[in-house]
Image 1: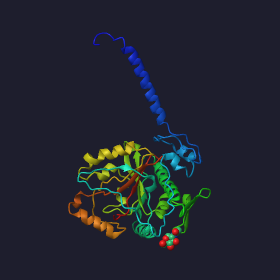
Image 2: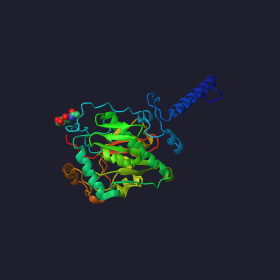
Image 3: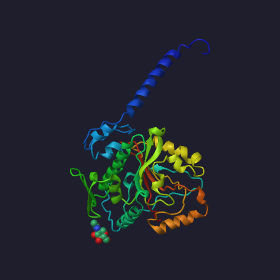
Length: 346
Ligand SMILES: *[C@@H]1O[C@H](CO)[C@@H](O)[C@H](O)[C@H]1NC(C)=O
C-alpha cells in the first residue's frame, strides 16, 4: 500500500465520499428548523430534533402573539394536575441532591410536569415578593439592552411570559385560563385578570409565579459570550440582580475559586449545546453565600446560611445561584434560568 494504489482503494474512497455526502446531507437536513405557520394551532407537531434556528425580528413578528411552545420547543405541555388544591398543596419532597464534596454540576433532564410548582404559600409569597420589589426596584427586576441585538431581550422576556402562561393553564386548569382572542390571563387563585400584552412581560411573570427567573443571551458583539440580560430575582442572598445585570456570566463567576477550571467550560458547553427540547434541571452547584439582602422566607435561608458559614471567606464570595431549571428559548436564542426561590424542607 505504500507504493502505488491498491485496486480497492478507489472504490472504497468513492463509497466513502458517498457516505460522507449522505451524512452531511442528513445532518444539515436534520438541522433545518421545523416549518412554522403563523397562528398554527399546534395539533401538528414538527418532527424532532429541535435545533436552534436564528430567527430574524421580522420572522418572529410574523409568528405572532402567543405561539404554541409545545410545538416550537418540543417540550410537551405538563399533564393537568386535577387533584391539585392550592389551599393544601405542599411541595413534593425535594429532589434528592447530595452535596458531594467535589461536585460541580449535576444536571438531569427536566420533567415537563414540574417546571413550575405552586404550593399553599403561593399568595403569601407573592405578597412578600411585591414588598421586596417595591422597596428595591431595579435591584430585583430589570433588563439590559446593551447587547448587539437588544430586541432579542424583549423577545426573550415575552417568550418566558408566554411559556409560563401556557404551563400554568395546562398544569392547573382549575385555576388558570387564557383567552386567546383577548389575550387575557385569568388567575383564579388571586381572582385577577391580566391583559398580558399590555403589561411588561416580566411583570406578568412576577404577578403570577413566585419564582425567580434570569435570562441569559449570547451577545455577538462580545464574541458570543453569555450575558445576563434580564430577570426578576428576589431570593438572592449576598448579591442583587441590579449589580449583575448586563455582565458576562463568566465575569460574574470570575472571583469564585475554581470556577474557571471546574465550571466555566462545562457551563459554556451546556449553554452552547442546549437545544429547546432538552431543558435541564437543578445543577446542584451552590457557589457562595454572602450577606443576605433579600430574605423571602427567613427561616429556611438562615438554616442554609448557618450550614455554610463555617467554610467561607466573605471576600471570595460573589454569586450564589440555586439553579433549578435551564431551558433554551426557541425564538430569541436566549436561555431562561429559573431559580429556586425557597429552600424546601424534606
Ligand atoms: C381545597 O381545600 C380546601 C380546604 O381543605 C377546601 O375548603 C376547598 O373546597 C378545596 N377546593 C377544591 C377546589 O377542592
